[in-house]
Length: 239
Length: 285
Image (cartoon, rainbow over all chains, first blue to last red; front, side, top):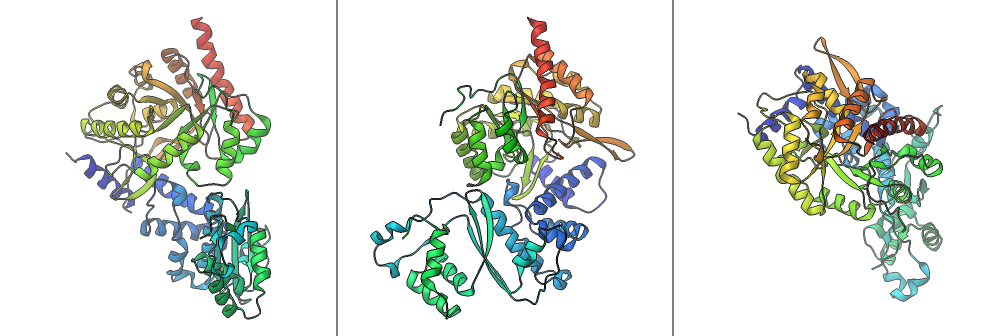
């Protein structure tokens, strides 16, 4: 008789197999692939719309086999879809698709991200010289950049009638944020994006400003930092 | 915050709370006895789910129903998952906490589904060990639910109802008896649903679930699938009445997760369950 462990291993192999299965096993197989596919569709509605339902379902099945769910919580599933799409030959005709997926993963991520006290700028002076300060991005903030106009694509696909998007229009540098319960995506300049990117990685304000200046020589650093603080991009708790 | 003093789940009908109904529940306050949520939907660190649950909890007793403990899995018990569940229990003070008699992962690969167990002495000892660990970690009683099953194992030696009853006897856990799942499994495996109910000792039954199923063709025959996407079937209402007769009134949940109807329809289904609970009560009085 099989041990419980062996029984579960053989059941799992049969679920993942492609051979015709008896009715009962087929129900489990459908349930597993359908619920994981639905979980992906819930996070990636724009990717699904761009490639169509039939291709999305096929893509999901391959992704589920290649990149198994590693968590008992279905909400954790699907982080690697963007990287997976980037490896596929069939999606070369949609070169922006992987970046749209990255944007959707970020948009989903801020939905569940922690609440946190925004940085109180009035207390900044107590923390030593400004240029040596390090900032912490609010947990419900993500940065996404692409060589393609992915937010324009994303916005077009929130409408029933999709407008034509010129994918040669150039890249976009994006800030994804949840404030209170509302999510938004905002276009940044390359310098603003570099500034936040450097701060997110732990750079001092002086070093982050240098990085931002290199990315965009005409950036107004004081205005950018002022706006980020007003928009609660930073959390309390500065090093 | 001030909460309903009755953190305990009353022996009345309740409904599953799903995200599309958050605002409607807060505004219309349907007169149902209690609410149940899927624990994992609140494992995120912040945002709308926790925001709304906090507010809704102030008005209703709450039950946490999990799908991820994977009590039957031979993978190590997921301590991270258990820690998140414990944090949720501490924050929301639920009246009941439950999960399923099933497994979901092997070798670290998760299927995120309620997969069936062979009902053997080995499985019973294994699940009992894990239930005890979970109960000790949470510091409270866990309820374990019978799943709908679509396959049986040749090595099974213990009927499911006896397996559950013995699990409850060994661990002190409660049984969350899903009457729809009993009906679905009984039809799929040609078993007697009433006999199943009659072999569960009433003292272990702490909650009842009701839901809808679909009929599908399979191998030239018919297979019932527990989809939580439809009203409770007439046959399941009849079986529920039989269960209430045997067990007395118990907290009873209307589960509806897919193709979600308006809140009013869920409340109406709960009203029907409530009437059956009260009919039994009136009879006894």
